Image 1 (cartoon, rainbow over the protein chains, first blue to last red):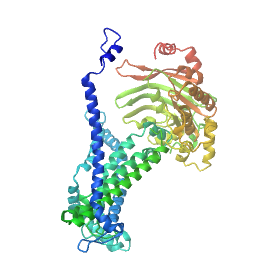
Image 2: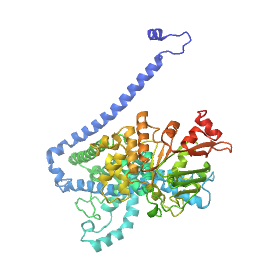
Image 3: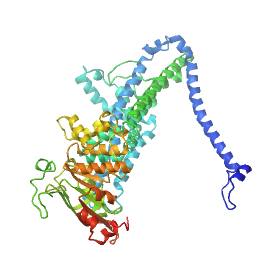
Image 4: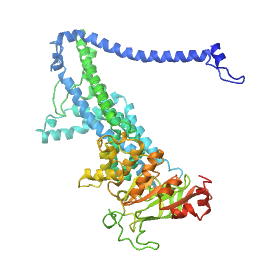
Length: 347
Length: 281
């Protein structure tokens, strides 16, 4: 240490000096801590996956790939198949993703394009208050408030969503659903009646649950579109609609898509609300009103009373769920990378 | 769409006769700003600038004097700013574009704009130029128009083999010429350029300047520039704006307007003289 100082010391009055022993130690400690925590996370994931695989091995040996295509779940006969659950998981996730994306992206556009602020500003102007010191910031504040409210949706516990679904959503949509079934029962989506829990209430609640993810990420992507592109479109005489759909959304599509993939991951794994709402019925039906089941709901409902043999089967099912989620995320990442190549330098 | 019809293009044959208007120097945009506010901030006052057909009009002045604001007034880009308020008139082909019945979107289709920062869209070169054509629902041969616009912008030779490539793959100067091609593809009546060279290197700047002189034969151009030499080189007429700090705010106003030769050779006003001699910036 002293040698370095000797070499570098050039002027009598200099206050420069090499890092002290404590600075060096603190730096090393911090670096080691970062390494440790990062690796602990990785090891944790590996450990969890390994445990699930190990616990599921007996079931894998016994039932093999037929487990994925079997349609019965009967512990008394030792007959296990999770095709209805795979179907239910994908069906509910995709439907809720469609609804959630439509509403989520629309909300993100509403929040990022200043529609609300403009409306409030216009309303203030009617009363000639738009430059009043107290009211000037109201448009901005209301936009922030609305954004936070939507993000707050993510803070509601899953079980509360489930209860809300049972006591509010199901009674509210039942008359409509049964009317649709009565009048248009020939249509595959309406081919059963809604007797209580079922696919549609589960999907509706699930889409509300994934909405904040899509909105928050899409909004960030939309606001990070450079203002100069917006100006370019307006300068060419594009209407706001044309600007949003021809310029801003395509430029932000990467971010929006990232949000959708993340939301899809969440929808696949969502457990409590679905366990309460989906009906836990082992059947494959395209009908929106039919009860169904999902992998996560199956796991949550069956584990507490599972026998040792059944636990292995459930671990196998858990592994399948893990694999589906992983595939979705990897596919999403690949698509993101593909699009990023064609959009280089957009920002 | 009250701007459609007779006021289409630069040909303003039906424009009412004005004083100081001779046949060869026909005023396309008659801009008179009495007062212009952003919120409670008075940005510009008392500025009258006529934009003459098939010539280049330059706005010069120190930073913050509102020259860009004045330019953006001419195609109602300022309407996008919350709290913008305008008193006065801007007449395009004799018609006031600030009448409540006029759609700002329509105004911007007839009066094109090129910005300070090159801002091509994140799509192919072809689609960038075709954007305006598609907005206007052009039914003819889009490819031909795109080629023509790129040729007029002096970019065709450089990009003709990679029209499908992203506009963002071009260099800064090329991007700016792409933006010019995009703006002139629909053959607007007037082309507004807001410091189009300030983000470019000298070589690219010179190219854009040559391009402007070439475009002048077909288009009416108004340009804002920091660069006095640029104004001197390209502009037929020059307006000098200055910022007035006497009333507490920073309000820009027009000090002097005239032929570029006169403004640069024989300025009449004290502020103009000082600015052109480089006594402040």
